[in-house]
Length: 167
Image (cartoon, rainbow, N blue to C red; front, side, top):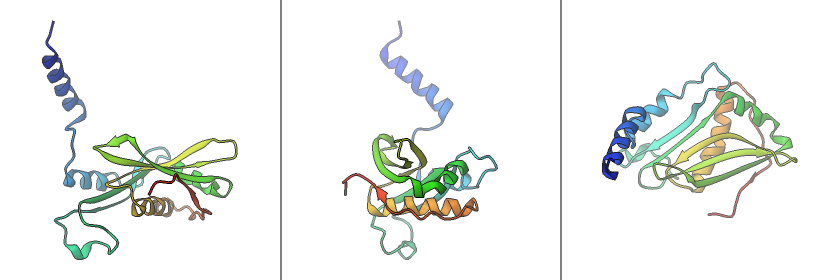
């Protein structure tokens, strides 16, 4: 019978071979966002709609004035079909929240969805941000418009989002 440590090391090796290394560097993340930011032909293939990255070693003048200090990254992923679904936003309520149960490398995952009168919720996209602040949610809503623009879809005019009472 193999020892626990032997099994643990074996599984770690298999995971690394199948999925690559577990942590991404800043450069790896930026390269991944750049590689997957091209709008695909398929309606259902996900792509990076928009991303912003500012790291401590960047020139301070390149950062927008409302960005805080420290490493900041934000990226939003969706599909053409989901972005088109947002056209029916007048009849739906747009909802957003961050979850720490779907953590990616320890960072919050932000979801944006629409729900209708029958309580059906349809996701529009998913974002990962370095924080859960108002600027991150502003990025999320702006990314919806950016994605619709990239896919040649008219912008949406939501009446207002529904969210929980977190800061």
